[in-house]
Amino acid sequence: MGFSPQAQNALETTYRRYADMLYRIALSHTERREDAEDAVHDVFIRYLENAPIFADESHEEAWFVRVTINRSLDIVRARGRRSFAELDENTDKPDTDEAGASDILRAVNGLPPKYKSVILLHCLEGKTVESTAMALGLSVSAVKMRLMRGREMLRAKMESEGRAF
Image (cartoon, rainbow, N blue to C red):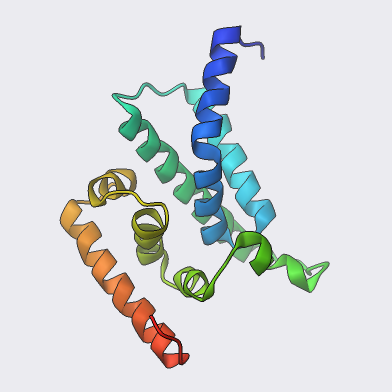
C-alpha cells in the first residue's frame, strides 16, 4: 500500500499526536504491554482502512479514544475466552516501574471499566468533561456522575488499604 508523501506525513503527524495517549488508555484496560500495543496497532489500521472524515480535531480525538477503548475491551474479552498457560508470571501485568504506576494508578486500574475510562481521560489525560463525554459517547452529566462515583470508589479503596487519597 503506497502513500503519497503528503498522506504519509499526515499519518505520521496523527500517529505522533495520539499514539502515546492511546497506548496508556489501552494499557490501563488490557494490563498487558503486548495487548496494548496490539490495540493501538489495530486502531491505526482501522483508521487507514476506513479513512474517516472528522469535523474537527476534538471529533478526531474522540474517535481515536472510543475505538481504542472498544478494541482494548474486545482484547480483554477474547483473552477471557482463551485458555492458555502463561510462559512467565510477570507477563500478566506491566512492570510497575515501566508503566510509571503509582498507588493511585493501580487503584484506578481496579475500577470497573465505565469509571476507569472516565477517570483516565479526565484526571490522568487532562481532558475536559466535555471532551471526555464526546470521546465516550456520554452526556456531560453522565461523565460528572461517573467521575464522582469513581472518585468515591478510589477514596474508599485507598482508605481501606491505609493510604491517603
